[in-house]
Image (cartoon, one colour):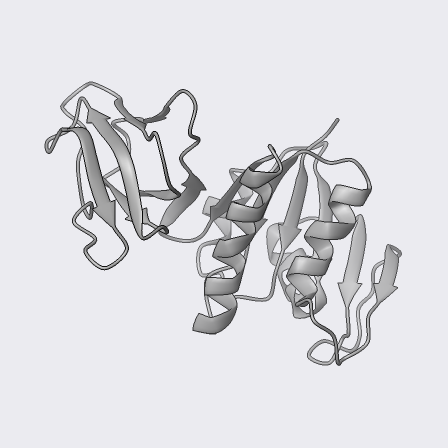
Length: 207
C-alpha cells in the first residue's frame, strides 16, 4: 500500500527539500491551514481534514472531512487516525514542527503512537528528520547528515548503543532529565548504527 503523507500547518521554509521526499504514489492528507503548502509543494490533496478555522477557502477537488472546532484531537492527530482507519502503515509528516511549540510537541508524540502500533513514521522539516528508534534491530545514520541527536522520552532509556560515531556508546542510559546525546557525528565514510533495549528514544538526523 502507498505511503500516507500528512501535511500540517507549521512553517516550511525549504519546499525544495520537502519535495525531494515526496513520491508520485503518496496519499496526501492536508490538515486545515496545511493546505497553504499544497501549491508550493506542487501537489494536490487526496484528502483534506480540519475545522478550517485557519484556512477557509481552497480550490481543490479533494475529499474533505470537516471537524468541529471543539474536539480532543488536533487536526493532525485526527488525520493520522483517519489514515490508520484506511489501512495505512507508513507515514511521513511535514509541516509538523515549525510554528507553535505546543503543536510541535503534540506532533512528536504521534511518532510514539505510531511506533507503538508497529507503524513506520518520520517527521521531516527544513533542518532534520525525526523518528523513533525501534526496540528491535537498529537504525542507521548515513554520513551525509551533519549531525544526529538522541533524545530520551522516558525517565530512563536503557541499553542505548551507538556504533561508528564520533561519540560511541555501549549499553548506555539516557534519562529524560539529562539529555547528553546531542550533536553526535558519523565517522568519515561510515554509517552510524543506533539501537536501544528499553524506553523510548528519538533519533534526529540534522542535514
